[in-house]
Length: 253
Image (cartoon, rainbow, N blue to C red; front, side, top):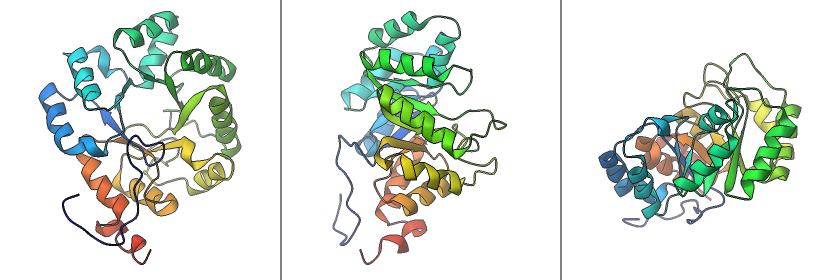
């Protein structure tokens, strides 16, 4: 930090297991990645190459290398996993992870239907190769899961070998744990936290109001995902209570 401010909340240090900031790269150029890493790298724990953007991204190998050389793991979005699975290309997907020397992957079923036992089998198999992050929740706004189902699915995926489970929201933040207005489904989140350890969940929170809500609920070291590269520094100030939205929340610790 550039100077001292007393009585700020303590942040976990990298490599973090809690307080993770997962950034969504939706198609940055190499120069944009370099610029982002200059300011956002110290506060970014992992980068997702959104949905299947990696398929059409020029200079993919070079981009991944930039992140990895900065000490930031990269993984392909869960929609790419689903695109391979629906075409019976699981082995090809595993080879793809090796080709790009990735150490993480995402297993999701937000766009296709996979029997949950089979999804957990994919998690178990991939966990022998890489660190698995699995996603719970649908991208379909019409599919609203009851809290008990979220809890059941999350528990099963953690037991299958997921390092973290992502609570789905899409990059827009208007499905899954949110209403279509972007408002948090507070009762759902409260129910999940009665059964699932907070440290195992990454809450997708692309909107500032959503980030503020989770920071006030859980604290500075809540794990948040689908953060835009331009929002990493602003998010860190929210976590530390040096932005108006959380300013009063962290006073008199």
